[in-house]
Image 1 (cartoon, rainbow, N blue to C red):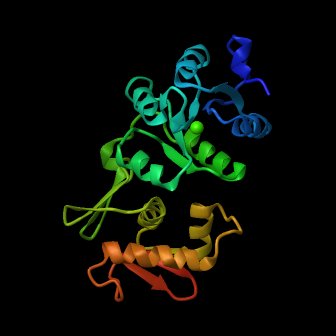
Image 2: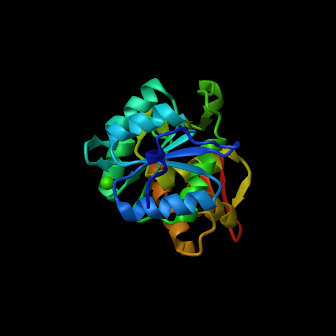
Length: 241
Ligand code: CA
């Protein structure tokens, strides 16, 4: 499989989103080239950061899918570079869960991330979600939600309780954000599974309970008797002030 950038010319998009895939593993290059094209994306590829800069300049992608470990450097550094200068959304691709913490901890401006091995369906769902987001920075006021003494910053993906930061995993944060956006309303278990796991059948329903339990341990004063994140028996959950 030859990466489309090797043609050396800008691609014609016909309105389809252009995704720059920076990936040095041939098996992933092939799968992404075929799979994302079928899903309606124009795929331009690069195997190194140096190549990525050239392809980026030529094709002005709408989205970058960026591997962390690349032959000529770290995708983390390149993500920061894109974020500071070009503002094109980047989805980081990491090979190890341990890298995820680095990706999230550094505030490098990544819009999202996936961990290898990932499913194409999951990746495409994330890509579409990122492309739907407004390109410009939203007003800070629109992206902060306060629930009682808990402050949630949806842009920075940070949470604080009585001004003290709370460390949440990605799923825990996504869950909390989902509840916060429906504050005072019941969010059904199905809504949770759809929003966080795209309804994938691989998810054991107990996984959701595990995440809710962990979330309570982090945000509640008395987790066994939650004041904010309450269970609505037989239906789902509700986040109250
Ligand atoms: Ca790699």
